[in-house]
Length: 283
Image 1 (tube, rainbow, N blue to C red):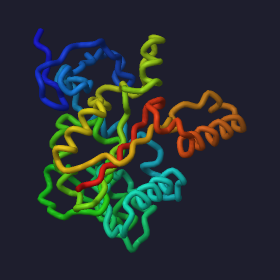
Image 2 (cartoon, one colour):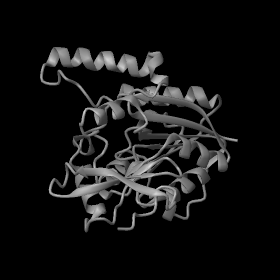
Image 3 (cartoon, helix red, strand yellow):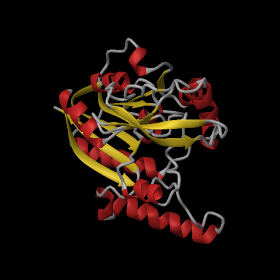
């Protein structure tokens, strides 16, 4: 059987490395591939007759915060402060690709032009109702030519069937000396490798919701070719694991401890946990 081209770099140097059962579609096994050219991994979106848009929207709309009222969140405020410090100058405009209901954008002052890209109509409607400017179509398909001081893309690239097109649109949207911030799940981490050695499914292997698993080498090289330099990288737990979630007091203590580690521990600069944040400056 012919193996598919890499979903990320389009190279033919790919091979199967296993199969993955979908938590969303438990009766279907998806093949997990590795690319020998860019070092990334991927799931072939054409392997099964699955409506990816429908499945992604169904998963997204099941999340409780889609319907929740806006409340300030220390996580997003920390991101705003991190970006502001790295930018080192005035920030007049922010574009968030995959803004959902606009929670991240809401943490920026109203003096900042806040624009979101969100293709799920229900989520986009909530963001618009909060006074944000929302582009309700894929960024790579718009005729928008504006550039922004800060462009962010949190937990979006892993869902895409044509990620290089989106990366290209993101790079064009960043103003000179602006920042591009990307957050993706990283398989090149101790946590992901440990789970594999123990024969346990890495929770980010979630087809058809997650399809692309970028190597950092690929992203660094791609963005360098488009005039960017990486100025910071951080790895966090993402709050995805709490062994005391059913014990209120211990659960809160665990969450607080992991938050401190994610934000302040030197370990955040090492590939231990699997939420990878990459900060690039456009030259």
